[in-house]
Image 1 (tube, one colour):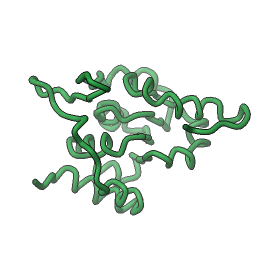
Image 2 (image 1 turned 60 degrees about the vertical axis):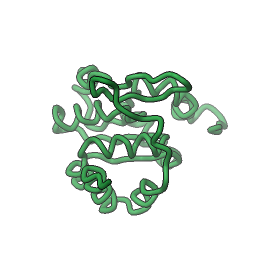
Image 3 (image 1 turned 60 degrees about the horizontal axis):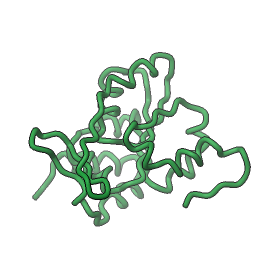
Length: 168
């Protein structure tokens, strides 16, 4: 089945980062993602299905004084959507560890215009290592659900200059 939203997003990603677009086309296990009875996005964490959608407006007040925001964990893209719609003067970098989750979001939310315009920059997995300084210089917003799962990367970013660290 063709997913027009995903293909639009992948086409946009290709215009700014061909390597990332290629990585997003690799096979992934999408069985951990789905929708509940009321259409809410769900995430299988161990053996329990959990809704992971958050109110995008919850991040809004933190962004009133910044120009560049880094979102650590994409969730269902609710924070991305909020920033792109409500904060026109802010550019956004999103890092996500899980390629399947990123593809799930890109299959359900059309961010292609913002990607092409350079307003939305997407980082995946090890891309984090090339962007550590960018993370340390800008406002980082941690997705409430995924920040607990991605604690090794969060700790790495926060302790970057306090000795040697590695991601495990």
